[in-house]
Amino acid sequence: MMVRIRLSLNYIMIPCNTSPHVIRQIALEHVPSWQFAEVSQVSWSKQFNRGGLWYPPYKENLARIEMGWEENGDVMWHEFFHSVYHYSPMNKSPNNWWSESFCNAFSEVNRQCFYKRRYTIEEADCCKDDKHLRTYIIPCIIILHHIEFDATRFKEFWISINELAKNDSTFDVSNILGYSPSDGSFKYHKTGLASL
Ligand SMILES: [Zn+2]
Image (cartoon, rainbow, N blue to C red):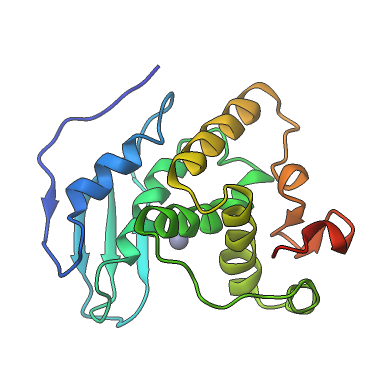
């Protein structure tokens, strides 16, 4: 059953090409059959300069987003997708290891602005101890290649894997994408991921 909360959103406007309302609307299109973790506030932090934080809903408090004061707002795309992921069938072990990379991929395909650095398979293999690369960057690049950098294909893929996760408790998207963000291992022979 789809449950959506109606409320007036207390967004503090920040410099960004896209308003939080538009990002939220696009994020909602990725929530076909579960609850969206509604965001009550998007604000700029005085405590940190870069990056963003998504606070999950807790008791009667809705989720909220806080961004570093130097961020131009692009990070909002990533943070809004946490509200999509939170109640989704994918947010269950082992698929919850993919949350950060799906948030990144959602941001990049919808902005059509892609992380510039490319990694060879050998480099990716060697950075298993770097949690940021292992969970945010490398799997994001793998997702982007899988959906051919296309926002519509991203949405279709996201919805289809949630259907699989909902109907099969053993489903692991790592088996489709050939990579495991939990330990940085490749599930296929290296030549199978030459496009990374
Ligand atoms: Zn995140």
